[in-house]
Amino acid sequence: MISSYAGISPHSDLVLIEKLCEALSGKSFLHINSTKAGGGVAEILQRMIPLLSSLGIKTRWEVIEGDQKFFDMTKKVHNALQGNAEVITDDMWEHYFEVNRKNASKIDLGADAVLIHDPQPAALVKYRKTGNWLWRCHIDISAPNPEVFSRLEPSVKEYDSAIFSVAKFARAAAIDEFIVPPSIDPLSEKNMDLSDKEITEVAERFDIPLDRPMLLQVSRFDRFKDPIGVINAYRMVKKYNDCILVLAGSPATDDPEGEEVLNEVREHAEGDPDIHILLLPPFSDKDINALQRMATIALQKSLKEGFGLTVSEAMWKGKPVIGGAVGGIPLQIVHGATGFLVHSVEGAAFRIRQFLNNPTMAARMGEQGREYVRKYFLLTRETRDYLALWYAAEHRDKGIVFELDPPMQKFTGLKKS
Ligand code: UDP
Image 1 (tube, rainbow, N blue to C red):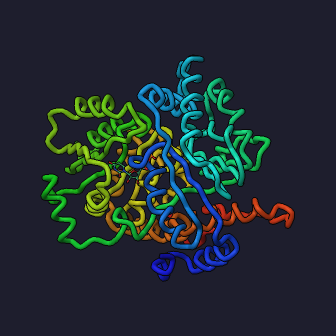
Image 2: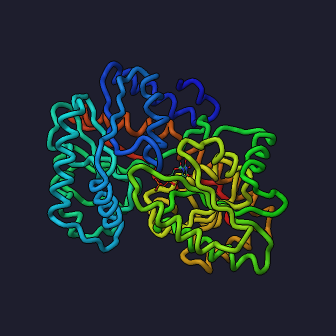
Image 3: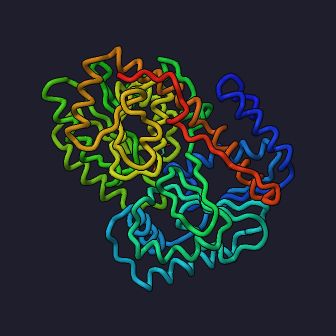
């Protein structure tokens, strides 16, 4: 219920949402992605779909089905769009389009607005019927492998609009492009307040000692998240500051590489009892919440990143954060004010030590981070943006000018350390 966000989210967002819902009331909104669980997209949809429904919008969430061959191929597409060299054969592309065709015949694609998330279901647009079709790209597409992008581009061009998380991902395409950063839900199990007792219970269950500072990275086991780099940074720090490292992750049904990366990480960590690798089942939201709350420093040392919800999640809990200076992370981390951005293992180690040796500075940045997230990265803001976009798309004749509110530039009052 939207009223539950009163006093948490910015009041202006709540007012705008109510006004937009009055205008769009009774209309239908369809979201389609490729997994119910695992990763940031499913995380957002699990919360946004019920919120939209409670606002009087007829909202549906459909998940496309595919076989191993399809998800192996789409993971390659994902990696290639984030800049990796990948070989994707014609046969693989044929399979991709065929799986999309089959899904189009099974899913009811009729709705007033259809929001397709990421490349996996992007080709469904070929079977569009009524309504506004929007392609929502969550990945870092700033420097894609051109050959792979060129295979996807004809589908993208069939949409009315494309939505990216960060301005530099926009493609200067022939269709409308909008920037809408993702968000976290302050009321979800992942982010709600927990008691000290609940946090300690989780620490005991996972056998995590709370007697030393704890570094935490929560991520799918994916090379772009650089778990090996995190271990190397921890090892550099450990020579001077006693601490423990927790790497927590779980599999996503649309990410077939997870197990291989997990094995590499286990091998690299071997022999160190202070590295805790936790393989969590899907929907371990409360456990992740507790881990983020018991952490001294939260890391997201990604090498490529669409947005990195885990950064906002930790900031919302008042934690000092260190993140790779890539993709959507610099949108959240204002360097020296809400956390530190890093470009290397050495840089990460340096900043970890800086936080560990300056608890007052760490606490101040944590507090500023929480307020920054309140203003820009809560679910209500993202919901507001989608509704506003949709409204604008339906009223093109009114010449509505869409001025989004790019964070960094407008937020004043941040103290740099
Ligand atoms: N997550 C989770 N369990 C895990 C690892 C991650 O629930 O074991 C959640 C994490 O808390 C965050 C989301 O999955 O909400 C990951 O989103 P992010 O944008 O950080 O990365 P993505 O996986 O989408 O690349």
